Structure formats: C-alpha cells, structure tokens
Image (tube, chains in turn red, brown):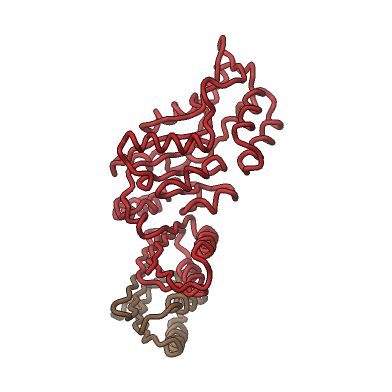
Length: 311
Length: 86
C-alpha cells in the first residue's frame, strides 16, 4: 500500500476538510486516518491517505492537493510516509523574502538610483527566466560605488518576517541545527544570523575597497547548485542525512535545495518553485511551518504553540 | 453558542469524509475537532462542529435530516447530537 501524509494548516473556517477530502474522493484516494483540531483561530489537520488505487498519477494528485491547500488555508504539505516519519535535524533558510521581509538588493539599488534596472533583472531571475549567476553579477555591477555606510543604515531597517524569532527558538529547543544558505549578501545574512541565533551562514560576499562597493564579488558566487552543495556539506559534517534536512525558500534558486532535502517548504513561493516543494506556506507567519516539521517532534508541541499564536 | 457532535460508522470506502463534510460546510458548519480511523475496514468518524452564524444552529434538524439521508445512500450510520444534551 502506498500512503501519503497530508497536513493542512489554516484559519479556522468552514470547508478545509471538505475541500481536501473532495479532491481525494474525486481521485479515488482512501483516507485511513484523520486527526484535526481547531486551536483558537488555527486549524491543523493531518491525514494518512492510501493512494494505491488512484485514477490519476500520484504527482498530479499532489499538485491538486497543494493548490487546494493554499487556496483554503495558510499552508499544506504532502509527504511520503517514509520521509514524514524521518526525524528532521537540520533546517536551512533562504534570506530575502523568507527570514526577512526585504529584497536587500532592490533596496540597495534604490539608494544608488538604479532601482528600475535592478528590479527588472531580479524579477526575471526569481522567475527562472535568466540564469541566477548572470543576473546577480549584472545587478551587483550596478551597485558599484555604494558606500558601506549606506548598507549599515539599511541593515538597521531590516524587517524580520513575523514569527521568525519564535520559530528559530522553537527549532533550537527541539535540537535543530539552523542555517542560512542564501544567494543574498553576507553583510545582511551575518547580521540576521546573529540576531536570530542561527548556527551556519553562507551568502555571497560583496567586494569592498576604500569603504565602497566595487561592483564585484569576493570569492565564488553562490547559485542554486552551490546552495545545495553547501547544505550537503553541512549535513555531512554534522553526520546528518539530506533526508533529515528541511529547506525553506521562495525563489528559483531554492529549487534544488527544496527538492533534495527531506522536506522542502516553499514560503510564499514563486510560481516556478511550487511544484518542487512538498510543503507550501501562503501566509506571512513563519511559525506556520512548525506544523509541518515531521515525526511528531514538534507537532506534539504545536498544539500549545499555535494556541499562543492565535491568542 | 452550543456545539454539535456528529458520529458516523460504516463500511469503509473512498468518499465518506468528502460526502459528510461537504454537507456540513454547505450549511456553514465549522469543524473544530475531528478524529477518523479505519479499523478492520470499518470507518469510524467523530466530529465536533460549531456554526459561526447562530441562526445556522437552528438548522440542527436540517443537518440531522440531510446527514441521515446521505448516510443511508453511502452506507453510513450517522448520529447528530447537541453537545449540551449529552
């Protein structure tokens, strides 16, 4: 028997159970077990589903469930029972758009006065229309001459995604190793990691000379493949399997890392990312992802936490 | 606002949850708690429902009627109770 685990999180409102179970019914999936609870305003539902006799391929059903899940609620995950049961030990976050509510490159561009040009390239890169490495090189070149002082001012204005600090605290309590692996800049990534107490930080380094940006990088550029390689390296060092890792991201350069980890979570993910993440979160609150972290390690606790969240 | 308890038992097959919860959601009922399991091919489900609009609660009789009717069609024995009367 092939089974899937469906976890749905949402604002407590009618229709979530009906919506998900109707899709399962349409495609002849049988629900073996359901546990659902509304805690204050938050509703969490976990289903074990038998998908041995589907009338469509399993990946198609998964896509439909994910679409419905973000339409009805604030997040959904569809996982294999095997990876779901695997205890997760490490979590890697993207920076811009995930841990922080700022696209730092766009903000830097604003200061320099090249916002329009940069935004255009950013959009194309996040949608996967142009190569990330090339896009980043082109954009950083436009930042040439920007004083580091301006970056320090911007750094003070960084807005963390709601729930970021609580989430990291909870994850650390549960024994997680935490990491930022981002195509963004280490100037900001290090600051965020320090503020949140994150263990590993990997980001792109901007080359500075005489207090201003040169428009060049120092060292190798971190792209999507390099991000995955870094996750694999950290995992190896910590003696953890990739399937015991969780990755959280939103853009095209997160696809590899989301696909290859035990649980990939698309946080307010771009369209191109959605098919590659087992879990999708469609709300501004990072704490939502606690409901997806498997094996019951946090889920037991989630009841209490979500209660707090909704009060 | 009082709550409603729904208990359903029958031979398991795909679609039972979809059929029952669709009726509830169409009437504006909100599932607060749900437990469902399949034991040796027997489907067992219990729900606690709340209605956002108190007027909907007056539909208890309607809910009862619709669920029992649907139950007969899909092979489920369904019981509907008002929580305060238990």
